[in-house]
Length: 140
Image (cartoon, rainbow, N blue to C red; front, side):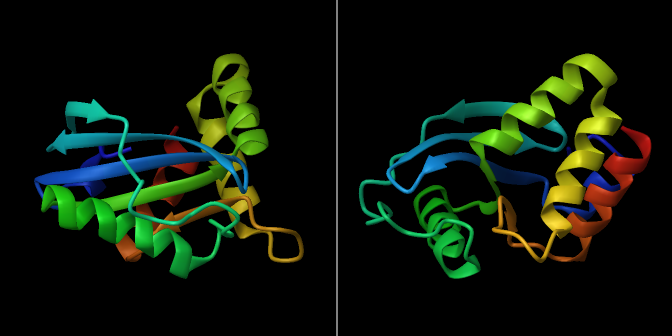
């Protein structure tokens, strides 16, 4: 995601949290530490200090708690993607069969749907994140 000219708009060291939401009681998460556009390390984050079960993780307020927890513990800027297990699997299938460009397009399409239940949330979502998502959907 950070491997483009837009990646230069982000801090040199940053964290990217990926949360795959199966239901309100089960999530999978990975925390990736980036040095520039290279992954420096990764881990399973400990969210035992957050009472997240039965919480709507696609609300900005809920997602912000996870981001704040990572920023406070690791002292690095954190960006997060919350995605439903269904959308995650669809993106993986598209990536394997049609390439990265189609997977990013699908992710943006689902993210922009306003009339259905949310299944994709980026937190925070400053303009560089929005630009990067659109760039990835165009370029793959």
